[in-house]
Image 1 (cartoon, rainbow, N blue to C red):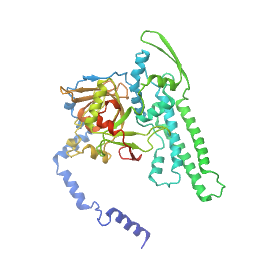
Image 2 (tube, one colour; image 1 turned 180 degrees about the vertical axis):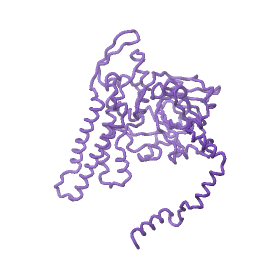
Image 3 (cartoon, rainbow, N blue to C red; image 1 turned 180 degrees about the horizontal axis):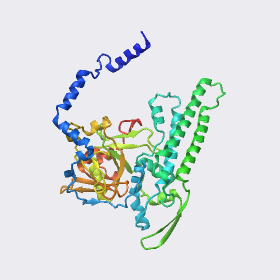
Length: 473
């Protein structure tokens, strides 16, 4: 039997699942598909309309869902003005800092304030680079093709993240005002220099793996030296290059700074401090990973259980992404309590689904775009199905700053403070209905004091560890 024939039979065996013949599209099937379309007058009409280039999104838009929407909320928190992350994936950093900005403004009696996202971004990428290389060393004995190894090299570092990453960097390096380390072209648009960073990291990672591979060949003859010590040398050489690229593109972070500002009394104030001292002076005393917990609605998994994402952090010594899975109703009760107490919350959601973020609109509701109705097809899937099939997942972080409730204090709509600039949505804010919350909200970072007794008790259990490539993350 020829090699090609063996390969063909093997492929058939794989596709048939050990007996069930995989069906190709033949003439009979193609004719049936063609007739199903050509005999459908509605489909032909929609084809003509869409062909006129009006756009699927515009044609499926239901303005009645938005019409009459007001911007009045029963419970609101202090907000501090809209920020703009530009062409970067730093929403998690902007959102975390937006939560702290009002504290700084009140403390120093100033009308406006922003942190340097560039400062924290520098340290985030450098720490992620170190973590990547350490993970390469830890998995050096595993072959390429192993899922953990492939997952590492697929995208060594990126500018995405969640709240625990900001916490890790803030605790280790602190924060500084925006004027101390301003944004640069490459902090605002990160793709070009990140591609260079990742290219250098892959090269360094490959060199590290080669050290361990060569050590196996030598079989402990002693000529190779200590593989781990050699790997650490390669790691440091790689990190020197990464630091170089970061310093060239972002600037070098200060170890101390002098900040001058004019307060609301018209007085010029001067503060000389370090980034870490400044961080400690502006975060609340209870701002730590023990008091602030991530709660999440993931209907694919058991509620009242803690889950942890393996190796999802940016510093070696930092905390991983860990969350308590709760029903939406429990999350909403806690969120309302937090807003009533004047405390906004870091939150992340599937922002691209059923949302109109156009200037002047800024509205999100599950019925705002009727794609299924437009095409005459059924697209109904519940949240669990959308998660498992990768149709939906958390894609963006924003700050929840307000909620409106009915006469029974049940939520009707909520409000996000976004970081896409004032030209997006309602002056930078997005309103979303409670129904949208149910379908597309995923996680919130909240002070544990707003959780009920059942949720608090659940925090004491040992986390279930999930891999970094889990479908939810």
